[in-house]
Image (cartoon, rainbow, N blue to C red; front, side):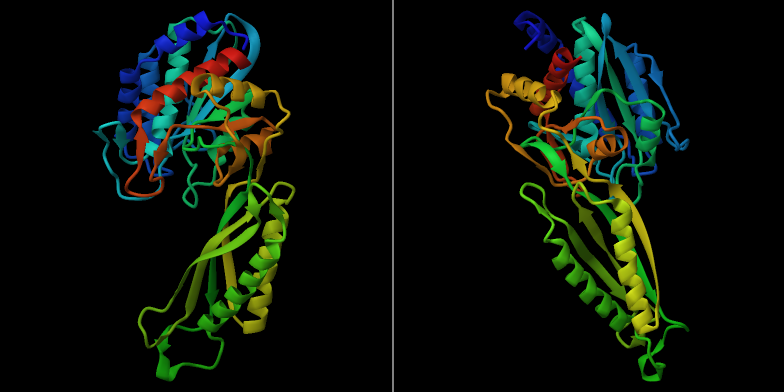
Length: 389
C-alpha cells in the first residue's frame, strides 16, 4: 500500500460512528419513494453544507428532485474516486427509523441510505484528517434508481454532464463477493386486449379470448426462457425471461376484455439491449396475430449488463484495502441485481465496485443495516481514496 500506517490510522481515527449514525438516521427519516426523493436529497445537501462543503445541485434531467454533488480535492492533481448512492426507495409503506441494538431499521436503511451515509463519512474522515495527498473525491446522490418507478435517467444525465470519476464505489448491500459481472435487465408489462366491453360469460362473443391468448403467450415466453438459458456465465448464471404476475377479469363469471402479464428479462454482457427488446416484441406480435388480439407492452430498463476487467488496477487496489481491514480477500463473484455500477460501465466505461454494509430486507418493510459495519465501510472508502487517487 502506498499510504503509511500512520496516515491510515489517522484517517481511521477520524471516522466518527455517532456522526455517521446521525446522518444515516436523518436520511432514513425522510420518506423518499422513487420519483419523490427531493426531500431526502435536500436533507443530504443540508447535512453536507453544515459540514462546510460546497454542494452542487444539478437537475440532471429531473428538476423535481435535483441531485447532490460534492467535490473534495487533494493537495496535488491526480485521479478522482467517485462515491455514488441513490436515496430513493421502493414504493412500500414508510417505516420510520429506529435503533435496535446494532441495527438501524427503517425504509431505505438497507437500500441504500445508510451505505450512502457511510460513503459520506469516509469523505468527512479524509477531510478531518487532512489526508488526501493527491487526486480528489466526487460524492454524488440521486433519485430515479428503483424500477419500475424510476428509469435511471438522472444518473445517466449526471454522467453525461461530467459528474463521473476515474473509478466508482457503490455502497449497495453487497459485501460477500467482489462482483465482476452482472446481468442487465428490463421490467415488462404486457396488455392483451379484445374488442368490446366486459360481459357476462353466458353472453360472451366469439373469440378472441384474452385469457387463452395470455396462456399462449405464457407458453411461448417459457419456451423462450428455456432457449435463453443456453447462454450462461459460470458466475452470473443464465439469461432469462421471468413471468411474475398474470391478471384478468373482475369476477369469476365475467368474460374479460383485458389480460395483463408482468415480469423481467435479464441478459449477459455481450447481448445488446436493442436485440433483447426486438426479440421480445416479435413474440408479442406473433401471439397477437395468431389470436386476433391487440397486444401492447411497456418496457422499463433496470440497467444494462455489467463487466469489470479483473486486470484493471482498481481491482487489486480494492482487494488490498479490503484485506487490510478484514484479514482476508473477497472472493470474485457475480452481482445478483442491477445497480448503478452497470450504468457507469455501459455509459462511461468506468470501473466500478459495489460494496456496502452488512444489511438485509431490501424491498420489504423490514429493512435493516448493521450500525457497526457502517464504520468499516467508511474506513474502506477512505482507504480506497488514499490508495487510488
